[in-house]
Length: 64
Image (cartoon, rainbow, N blue to C red; front, top):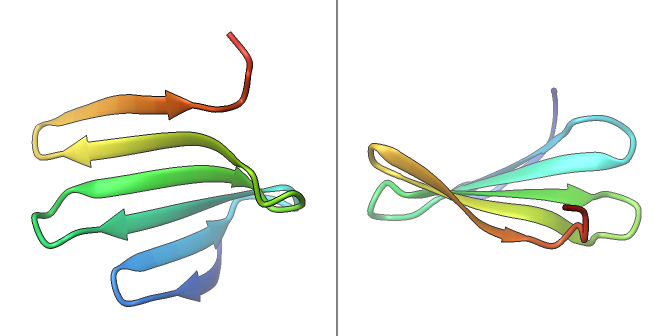
C-alpha cells in the first residue's frame, strides 16, 4: 500500500487507483477504519476495532 497522507492520529493509504483506507486511532486506543472510493470520495464501509474485538458498524456499499 502506498501512503497518501498522514495526520495526527489518522493515516490514509491508497489500496489501488479507486480504493483507499483511512485508519484513525483515538485516545482510548480504539481504531476506526474507513474504506472509501477515491473517485467519488464516498465511504463504502466503516469498521471500529476496540481492544480484543472488531465489529462491522456500517456497510454503505448497498451490496448484500
